[in-house]
Length: 161
Image (cartoon, rainbow, N blue to C red; front, side):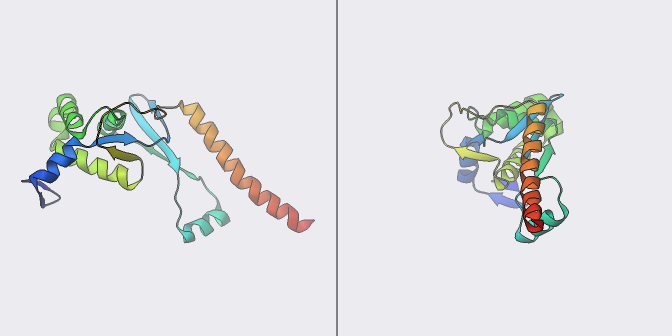
């Protein structure tokens, strides 16, 4: 049995994890200098939403990834299972990525918790999950931020009328 976070993982569970096929959800992301940057909408709690409306601020999270995470993200296209991803990472990064299985599984857990990746049983191409240009992502953010500010301005304008 392998260990993950100090807990023993049964062999059947390991096989199930290794055969899972991760697929990116369709969010905004781009590649710059071989590093992936994810851009996605913030999910506010009720309290955070109130503070956001009063104070303002960006409504998107821009999350740059390191080289290893970027490589994993690029391989989450529905055509590679977790075992293949582990093999490729070990071939590229050698000792820097050890222990590869634990690191990849933890990254997959984080991405799944944030609803950035889903898992399938079968391999196959997925449409609509490719990268966008950095300029496109910035323009989408500007439009979304204007929509939020526009609602505030209309509310303020109607009170004075």
